[in-house]
Image 1 (cartoon, rainbow, N blue to C red):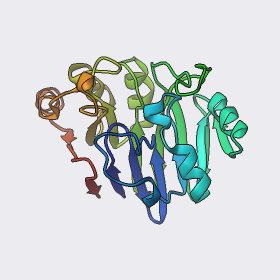
Image 2 (cartoon, rainbow, N blue to C red):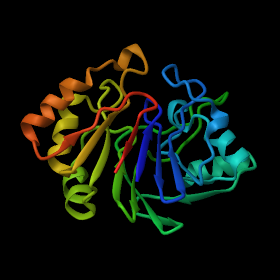
Image 3 (cartoon, one colour):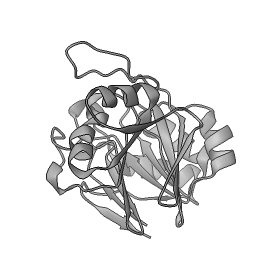
Length: 230
């Protein structure tokens, strides 16, 4: 499995020959230097309707033919733009090339905020992506909530967690370290920080917190564009 971070919450997970792109905020991302044209995913997962997460999903899907996966309301929106997508809701699953993508809850807003009028974007979500190499939990934008312990940690048990630490709009480092305690992943990757001044954080402080409370979990701090391979 290969995991590449493009800043903010944009990740590409590659399992065998299948590429899954999540929240592709690329062209307007001030910390990302990768061109939109370089992406050729098989699947694009969108966690919610905000411009810094839906990002370039429609352009990339239109050009590459990637399968779009999102909640029902965003799927309807994509359809109105002439794109095909697989709508889901919390608890649902979609399978692609032997990979199972499960939609799980997130505590966040999701309205589509980049159109002339703000319109409903349904419910924000996270995803658990189960590959032959293991399970990856992308939390999306969220605060701390008990399902991280009782459902995601206790039932789905992902080996890898991608968690926001930016504060203000999501969990900050302290709450994210509690999420690590609850989920008990083998590895955690911080995300959704240092894209804008309002979410500036030092990921090493998060790493120190996790080291004290969950020493069995490895904190992987990637540079923007950085790759982790297992």
